[in-house]
Length: 311
Length: 278
Picture (cartoon, rainbow over the protein chains, first blue to last red):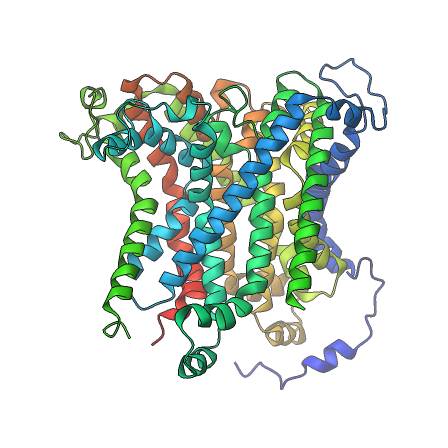
């Protein structure tokens, strides 16, 4: 390792770049970066922009149909569409329930995992399991749990004497949405728990000890020491969870396909049907744009409120 | 502290136990179902633990043409996607770490921004685009999509790995007269190996687990990936078919389990590990 010259890092940065640069890259940099950038731009950035644009057109399936710009026509039509209102109502109930329940369940678990307990290693490993499973498999697994005849849920609840007849959870108007929400909570807990636990571990131990010497109880210490320290992590994580949940598709598609009778038809399931069952590309894209609008409004209101609380 | 407050301590263990049951039981049920005979699956009172555990369901699942073929399809699509993702991301990730460029910031903004936009906005134009290129309903089309959508995150991973390699090493090589390409190949690449494995595994597992793009972009049953086949399987769900379905689902989980076993040190070591220090 005698090749290593004495530290000369700073001098390198002071040297003016001799060559012409583009996007902050010289010729070598461009050559190395461009093979990755072209496909990303062509197959993800461009489709997204075109998708947003399609929401303002009457694009339809079929090769020979002409697409014309129709401005806000799709959105006027959306406002009069009861399926739209139903799916957004279901979507918001789903997104809020899952996000809030997920947060409290994960906070509880993270607080437990942050203490010295026996079996903690097991809980830690198990807490990651939902994360390590493909979404489709999670859906199938819970279909087996909810299966009307061969399912675990009915069997356990009957043994406990809570129900006396098998329930077809995923086909019932009153139980399908809560049943699906429970799966959503289960599937999303690991990420939230891991992030909250990381937040908890950054809480100052000295502050905790000082507070308990001043006679603060468990709740007071949580309220005045722990909570202020993890508040920024909580805000970031709940925001992300809300966005992910409102945009979720695969899990519910596998569980119910939006049924029964639209009781679990999340906005994206509705948009998927519009696009690929009925071929209304423009209308489906307009739905996507409406979702972006709804998400932005809720996230903005939430973030502004959290920031006010912090100051 | 535990000894002074036995009630609180007991409550904590009760809570932990409740979490363990909630987290583990669905998985336990999947495994249990996969080991049951068709007769046992048809019981009116389902048994919790299989009476005569058997691997017949796994055999049956592999014997079913569509599943065996879709496993091969998925393995092919995921491997090629992972390979391409890594090949394209190594040089670009290097650039992101070593240059003060707009590209680095744009990639991070793109990773965050792409979370907000619902999948439907991307999939319709992507479907049209691939159809125009003649790549709809083909593995190549699916591979392109997977590469493109796992690349930003792979870039981000590799960027941090490159940043941890001291720049002095490269300077020394440059002073010895090595070209940029040679420096990359002989100095940076070997040190980057763990990062490459991590990024490659990430891309492989993302492709292996993916469902939404495959749902829209693949129509031919012979080209289906495993997620797709499993979902189609659900439709024909007689009680007797539940066993093979559960078995195939478990098989489908293996790659991500390997990924998480590999990454666990990072996930729990980096984030959860602090508490172990005593």
